[in-house]
Amino acid sequence: MEICIIMINILIGRIISSESNKLTFPKLSNTRYPASIYAKGVTFLERKMTTIGVITRGKYGNRLIETILTKTDLEVVQTAVPEILPDFIDEPEEFLERLNIDTSVFDSNIVITYSLHPDLTVAIAHMAGKAGVKALIIPGGASKAPVVELEGISKKYGMLIEVEDICCTLEAKTETEELCKYLSIPELEVDIDKGIISSVKVLCGAPCGSTWHMAKELVGIKVEDAPAKAGLLIQQYPCRAVRGGPGGIHESGDIHKKAIEDAIKRKKEN
Image 1 (spheres, rainbow, N blue to C red):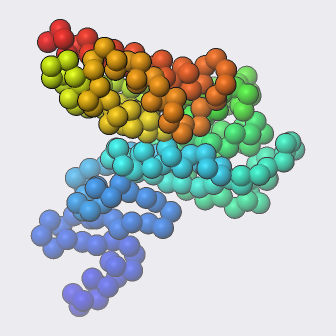
Image 2 (cartoon, rainbow, N blue to C red):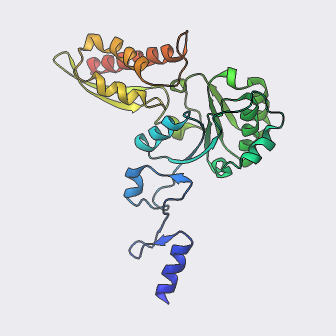
Image 3 (cartoon, one colour):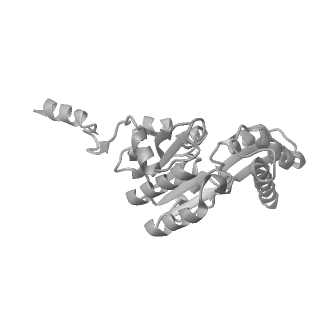
């Protein structure tokens, strides 16, 4: 009888620990957990994880997923739209249905869509709102997202919608604080030894992962050279932000430059 019960629990995807009598959930086919969290066998009763849904398009969104999985304890559900899309899509919701995307992405508390297409983004916003998503984050700026129409969708469903040119300017709101406490405007701590940066700790970093790259490379740099070096490192990082004009990757570089300046100032004051 006991063997039968164990087999039934395995078949429905749940394993009951005889020691703790708590449910633990194995990795699902459409859900990825951070390796450090999954390996520890974190149980549902011990920790309720926030789910981030990510809609990718080609290469866009993959680096965000990697950052979430390696730098946070958040859960990720991913689906994708094709890299190559028509310029205009007359019936975007029907188009999405034909794509047969994994709609479990809309079971997430927060959805980040790299659809980068005005028609599809509006359809995704409607789907997210109907599903009860708390916040929809849209990288790529207003050129890829009809802001006025999205404002109407936000009001209709009571869903926060953030359209961002670069995600390292993302500010925490009630609906996004679980994400933004890890990934948003960079915040750093530094140690200094004889005028040299001896360590850099990332308290909060850019969703693309550039902050951690910068932090590693700043170790061993003179304090007075660190801010300029920080900005340069960010501009050299393969972020998807726009290049060759104002804003974009240059703004990201300035944000990180300020983050290291602030960290150095705090260290000296202490």
